[in-house]
Image (cartoon, rainbow, N blue to C red):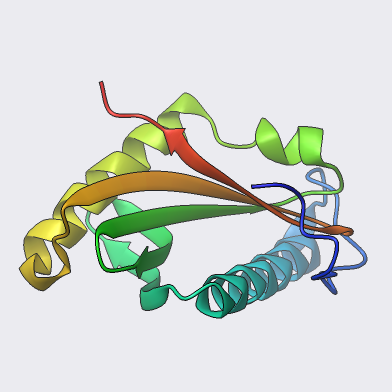
Length: 139
């Protein structure tokens, strides 16, 4: 999907990744929650059902679990000052944790099973939101 300029995200200012200290961490956490809320609202407008937000599992946290009739979607949300920074914010280690967390979440919630499953990345920047479908692929 392309950057949704019609859905301007009110995440200004975007706090830099190098923000230090308790106040910086708190501000980044608040910004992250707002970004997750914006992405969930966008997915709802597109007809997806939000099954869970900020789902904590033994394998890690999943930002958003969404579904439509045929697909279960695990969404990792990244809020950054630019698309390029957001695109590189999902490390291989984070991807592995997300896959593990999704496996645990699905085992704990068998009713979520769908015909297909995918992992999307939602990149949130001051100008909008870009959803990258199938951002993480299982080998």
